[in-house]
Image 1 (cartoon, rainbow, N blue to C red):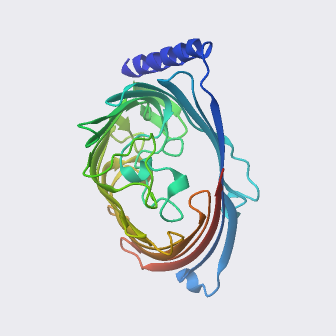
Image 2: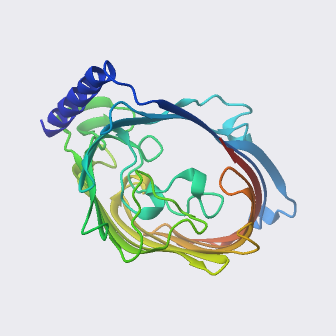
Length: 371
């Protein structure tokens, strides 16, 4: 019932926007993102002593945004990712709509977005892929639907002159059938009830310096803002997940804490990102509990064109494995985020529960253009 009510509100908002669209049009903007990447990997598993190559188009996106009125805007983008990578089959076609939402700005203290949205669980996952400090994201959102996106409605705003940044969203989440027999994954079988509770995501960020005013955060302001913030997030869905036909349906819950620093230091810029994520009944890991945390830092020098980057990340899946990654890289900014090159070396050790450790190495190089 709650989900139907949320979707009815979204439908009404879309209808209202079409009415506004018949009036004054404030303009439409089109952008394009391309990230071309090559990876070279090796592992001591099975005694490997050679390097594998895997080249791909990491992301290819068309972004469409605009204003219908001063207070009504929209955003939509396509994505086509990992095109041509070996494990995906050569030149696999995966184009889809990734984001699509309408935003109503009542005032700075209250904005409402409805549609296919990236829930604001933590600063890192709400950051634009255009502005990443490294080559990719460092931690997974425990409940991932359409590349972390989910359909729903979100309320957000800036309070106390930007010191408080809040987000509260109600989303579809995932439906599950309480099976008496059959396969919960395929949906084939007999069942007695269907659980369809909403997913609720909330985030509170305290800004001690500049506020972040845009829908998406940036991972790397390159001196454009002075950022020092701490954030906390929760993600919850009741009765949403079942591991097998005979297993109990369980609640999913995750919480996060993060630190974001982006500080100009004379002609240089320090960027520091740290986050901790704890999840219960994580559906991405077979309903197991999991903990993720990472620290990543970059220091832009030479007129902010060269940026060495260090990263330490841990993924601990209960009763399964612990994965630890150390990475070092360097970013070269030809024209900030519009054109750049990134190089990264990573060493990852996976320690499975009851098994032998496996260590892998990876070298990645990526070029990015954003128009």
